[in-house]
Each structure stands twice: as C-alpha cells, then as structure tokens.
Amino acid sequence: MTATVIVMTTSAHLPSGAPSEGAISADASVTDRLVDANGQYAAAFADPGMDARPVLQVAVVACMDARLDLHAALGLELGDCHTIRNAGGVVTDDVIRSLTVSQRALGTRSVVLIHHSNCGLEGLTEDFRTDLEMEVGQRPTWAVEGFRNVDQDVRQSIQKVRTSPFLLHTDDVRGFVFDVKTGLLREIEPA
Ligand SMILES: [Zn+2]
View: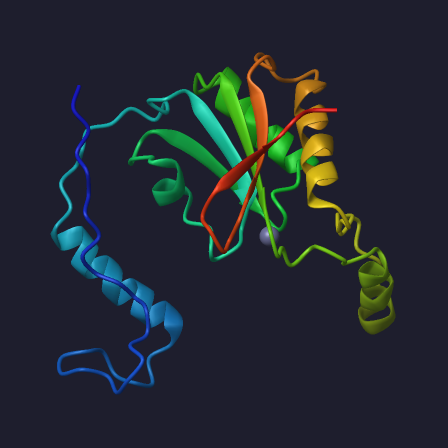
C-alpha cells in the first residue's frame, strides 16, 4: 500500500504585511481564515483510501505547544499515528481513555510521550486553580498538572502509561523532551 503524501500548499497563517490581492477580507476572523484555507485544501485533496488504524501502530502523546510540529519533527505522514495532545502532554484520565481506544479498538502497540523545553506549564502551580476559584466562584475538578522539572514529569508520565490496567501494550512506552530551539528530541530514561 502506498501512502499519498498531501503537500500543504495553502496556509491560514497571517501575512506579515498588508493582505495580498485576492486574500479574504482583513476583518475576517481567524476561523474564517481557517475555513478559507480548508476550501483550498479540499480542492486539491484526493481520498487516500486509508484505514482508521494507524499504519505505524503508534500513539504519540504530546503538549499542545504551537512550536511542536509532530509530523515534521518525527518524519510522520498522514495515517501513520494517533496524536493525543493537551497542555503539557500530561497523561490524564482522558489521555488514558484515548490510548485505551487507540490500542483496543484501533490496533496501536507503541506509545511515545513528548514534552518540551520552555513549556507553558513549567512553574505553574496549583495556585492557578485557587486563583480561578477566587475569580469565578467555582473550583475546577481538574488538576493544573504544572511541573518544575520536565525530565521528572516525563518519567511520571511514562510510569502512568506503563501501569495503566486498561492498556493492552505497555512494553514499548518511551518518553522524550523536545528542544524548541534545536528541534532535537532527548530521551528520558524511565524511573
Ligand atoms: Zn508545553
């Protein structure tokens, strides 16, 4: 089976200068820009006829950080993997839910965890929740999951995945820190 590589020739990225001729109006919202870009994407799109099961049987759990282009950084192509992202790339109950579906319903076997340097969660504490409670009058049920040491946070995430009773495959779980300045991954040894 050959995978069709979709080359992204359109971008919803705002030009740095004035809008060019033919661009959508300057007062368009960012979502309008995304929808416009999608029209161009779909016009060039050919159904690759892929199965929902990831070709490489891998799920990648990563931070939502805008500087982390998972597909480019890991040499992944469309259809290769599941990507599960949240603030910090933290292994929450909901990430375990996604991994469980990924493994039990869609055939993945490996898990790759990616945190990164200069993360927005670094240094954030549970005071964040207290401040929220003061502001809105309700304490969030979720933990902020802030951390001081990114390596230790990756180790904890590896451990959470490896010890989950819901997962079928916990023998190939590896964790990394992505350096946003060099683009390099640094592997973290488990605890
Ligand atoms: Zn981050």
